[in-house]
Image (cartoon, rainbow, N blue to C red; front, side, top):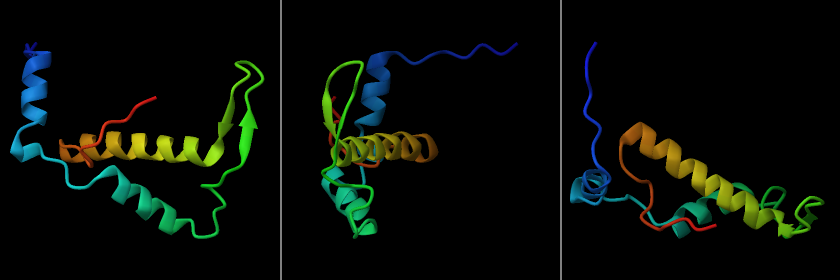
Length: 91
């Protein structure tokens, strides 16, 4: 059985913030590309939806954009071992 040393949190932060791992784009550029793909605004729209459990009303277009950016960031970082964009994602 091969023992693999886990990097510490600080080591991961230093690795991902080094110039080698610098992000390629900004989140705004990626969002504009997504909007360009949906010119009829069928997916990214201002339609509102109410959650009957939490009683929160959500704008579907904004929610979907956040989901897409989050998933793109994860998938890109898994494939290329660096971030797609440097901006943080906040809930």
